[in-house]
Length: 77
Image 1 (tube, rainbow, N blue to C red):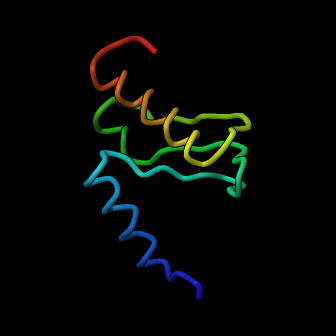
Image 2 (spheres, helix red, strand yellow):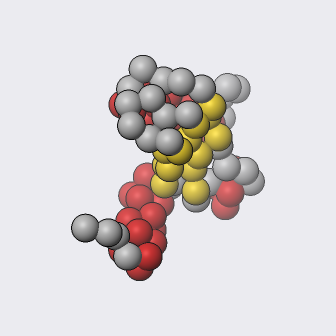
């Protein structure tokens, strides 16, 4: 079943509202090539891109969440 554009946009908006960002994995599967976020420009003035092969999707999301939390707390990354 193919997701229609409005459904995808609603998922993005929900994630931004809930988490302050929406994370997109490019060339998904078990080892994404890179990931990027949508929604942090208003808060930090920039978005994040994480490049590289990851052990798993969960690992990728964990790394992104750590970087986000460090930025949010004002720490250097």
